Amino acid sequence: MRFFIAGIMQGSLIPAELHAQNYRDQIKQLLLATFDNAEVYDPLANHNQSIDYDDDTGKNTFFNHNQMCREVDCLVAFAPTASMGTAIEMWESFRSGKIVITISPMVHNWVVKFCSHLIVESVEQFEQALSDGTIKKLIDNHTQSIDPRVQ
Image 1: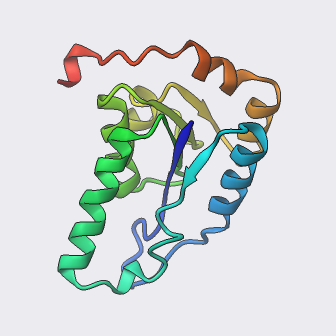
Image 2: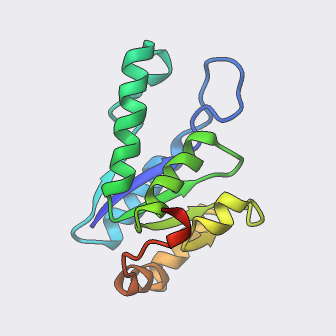
């Protein structure tokens, strides 16, 4: 089972800074502890200096990550606030028929609402959904169908 951790990096910050990224390791460890065969890709782990990339390197990284979002089995998105990059990654996975699980309190945001198979409001609720089998059931019952409205 291949997972992609999408989530806020720079968000709406004007300076070249990142939001706290500790959620990435939390999510990764929870997935690895729950799924024996999990392969978890964290885009920041291999690109921790990406905020300083030149335009060509940044563009290649951006488009390669979008391609990965179309190929993984499940995307886990962390969006405590709006994030354009996370929204694009969610869209790429969703329109490719992949499972999208979103950790966000923004339950009325259309990208969160319409491009997620499951929405939980916190990492703690995500952990609970892993523990109680909600996410395993979602994965086991998922058919990779693509809504004709997104083609």
